[in-house]
Length: 472
Figure 1 (cartoon, rainbow, N blue to C red):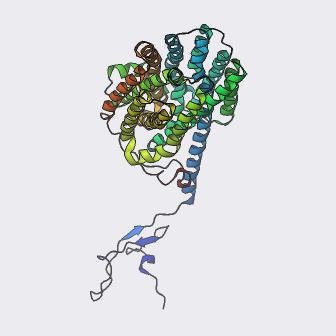
Figure 2: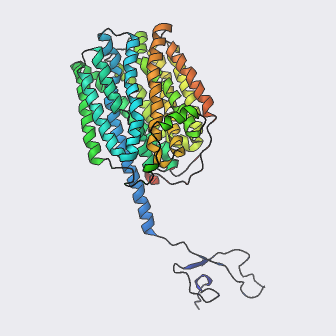
């Protein structure tokens, strides 16, 4: 004879069962024991209802996050592709106007002076009016600068074109803030790594296109870069959605734009401030290498404007692989803090390997240490910075970080080219390795952030098996 099982009976007080059903937890203490009389009372716990609507909403949100991030990565890739087309050609173009290495360093620095001035302003504009308008205006400014570069026929016009490009290129912090708006805190290092991988695809392909375009004349690389940027503006206008909420009640409480810059100077021991210092000092070292790389390879190994693109392609391959496929699992395993420390160690070894190499083949074996180091260090630092920043000031915080990074980029070519000219071709690399050593010390003094709830960025089928795991 069939009898109703105990877990389907009504409660002892006669109350009707829970609307979603009622389950009884089994344990040795409440189970009926043979030989001990009647059934003991059992404690009922309500069942957790299965809600397909909430699961569908969560899946939709994750797909929307992934779609926005993918579009942003595409926009950033095309933007950096245009910049990379003209960047390696600057020393060779300037040498045609009889420029000295120090003058070439000043041309590089002019871009970063403009960028450091515009970066916090772009961040504040994006906090107030949205990330999308700031990105669209910045991309348009970059297109104008590339066009001027193509038709530059003097040192003065090279300076002007780089300044215009720097004013338009000050939106790096806005791009990072877009990620902060879209992605949960625990997934930002991985997402910023993906963003860096996208930009590295651009910096990998751009020099090759620029080198090939130089066969068609000096104007061709600048014209192609400007055309690509205009296409990018249309693509972003059509497909890139706004990431900020429409109404921000905290807008009236925001501090002046230069307040954060001054706070880094006055209180460098704060969490965000210390991360800003680590970011900018590391950028000083990396930009020192970038400023003299073409000069060094040309002087030591006979590399020209028609072959420099392949060197950047080789370096870019390792950057893309590291930032797209490996940064997420590495951060999951060792955390952002140890990622910064490991990245600094790789950078030191990579910087020292350049003057130690006696041939291009030997250099090719050790060059990957630099892109591996930057892939570990920069996204992890930016992710910790976004987690420690106030939500309403995220764009400004990232803009301030780019201001100090811009100061580093200004100082780097001036110092590196002066060392290159005055103390030998190897001096800039030893200088860069030394200042990365300072980063290693600062990295061990970064406090752990408050723990956050783990929420996967994308479904596990897309993000991989470690997408929902957080390791601090």
